[in-house]
Amino acid sequence: MNARDRILARIRAAQRRPGAADAVEEETVRAYLSGHAPGPRPPTAGDPVALFRARALALASTLAEIDRLADVPRAVADYLSGNGLPLVAACWPQWALLDWSHAGVRVTGGAARADDLVGITGAFCGIAETGTLMLVSGSDTPATVSLLPETHVAILHAERIVADMEEAWEHLRREHGAMPRAINFVSGPSRTADIEQTVTLGAHGPYRVHIVLVHEAMRSL
Image (tube, rainbow, N blue to C red; front, side, top):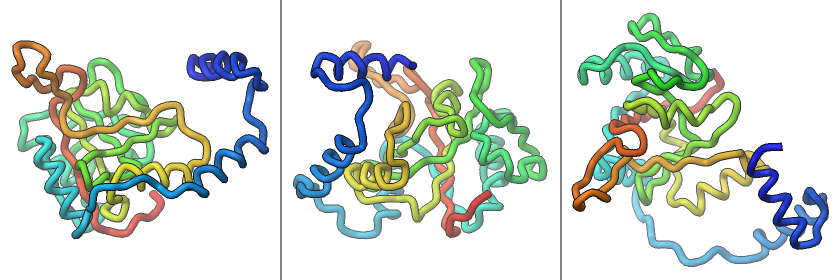
């Protein structure tokens, strides 16, 4: 049992409920969610891809757009070389199957280590309203790859861009069912202004976020 399970178990014990939710309780929650209209949302008129692009750039992310998934390694290599970064990266296992060697990039599939300078991930979706990436943790999508390296490169399919965070949660409930252990929202490079109100990048995570936006329809790797 992990820490989250222990915390939730204590909460349920205080409510005099059994240790785990049964099918009836889960169906009650689903019925409640489906039976209540969502709250008001700000309008997000226009092309969600264009809005996501504008919002992400405003957050100091950088962005490259490509037509084909097969072009991802070359696009990443161009970005790393153009910024004087090493052509070596930790990478989510699913993306490690691309032809990185042909682009001169060496990737290691799996969790990132403390000395990794570049991390390459995918994204569950992009949120147009805020230019945010939504990342879902799991055995094949380790959170360390987006958190430990100084440079985070995220591969995002254009068709996975949704209007707002409410829609992102709807997709997650529909596609995953149970909540994953962790969900991370990435809105540009990590930053803080705690010290003398001076904005500093990279205080709590990567100080570079580069998004490779793929317009080709999704397919399995």
